[in-house]
Image (cartoon, rainbow, N blue to C red; front, side, top):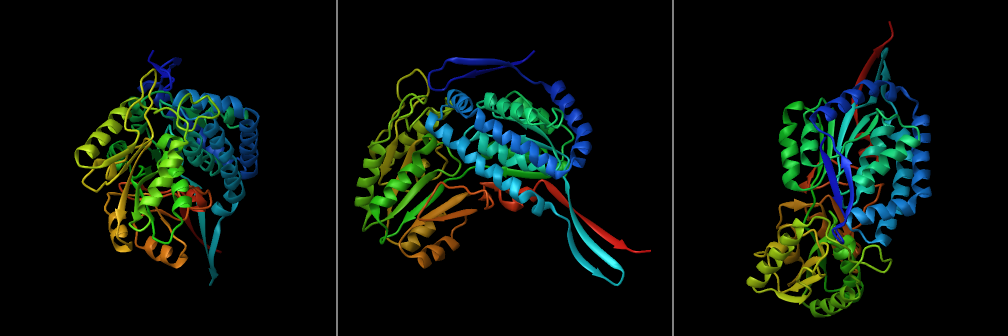
Length: 457
């Protein structure tokens, strides 16, 4: 029987060795889900909501255990693990509050003996190939609305957050969701590939562009719903009238939170020349106060790099920037073991010939580029194959809106960053992916419209 070994990225210790799925078990789980889905779709929404409420209560009751598991298997600082779990609660509340209205039948015409109605019916069986960096957020953005709208879910958590994925599944089962309707698949890429071979009605993936492209190709002939959230190279522009200290403190957190391992981390910063030096001074002071170390220490802000191969990516970006003339202001090195640790790293005198200004870092590394004004900033912000988020810091709201309207991004920020709201759709342009989650649109994403033409005989 195949197994999956799970290691603590902070120290390399073996945490667990789990029985893993194979092609045969994936096929069996998919068949079970297919058989169970119609009965689940027929369960009244009020009953489904009651189960999700019990799931929410289970998270609250076990929050410390869940946070500790998350920290140990993916290296997120324990305070940030608690933040993720507490932040999940209002997302669940949003789905519970909005599900009925989002999928209510729409009566669009009644006249001449003809009545026309739009119904929102479940997709059927959905595959959720999820991410490790925010497994509660990313997983439940799919799982909760998918279940509420009547779908069965085949959930493959990342191999770097499988224990967390098993907790999510266990708590949903304890809340009353049938085991056949909510199934957890254990394994790495080969299990995800086996899942895509099944008869599924939608695939929802969060991860790298390369993997997303492979998924899109694998299901291209299935003619099913596909949602791919593939990260970004998210820019922010600090205008001349911004408060350099406030902007620096906010953006340092936006760049380094979760050890820089966020899809919407600030990944490149453009600062007007007139305040550039003051901004950099405050930015370095803020980063210098971030404590790196043991993720289980409540005072730690910079935790472990979850995937060991990412250390080499960060080292290559640092070497490339130095070779092309960038100025290293702090950090720049992997820390000695055990575990996967990288110093918070800040560069100035960067440009777009450098990899760290073009390709996703997914670590505590940031480049700060001086610009002459708005036009140069917008051109540089759009000089990317990605388009997830972008932001502007300025006292001028009208100017911010005008600038952000010209930037290709699914989410835009004025005087804030690295923020996700359940009330707003989460989507991207270009290589940041297709489709969306969150908002009422993200509930309807798990349904398809069915047109009813009704004439009284």
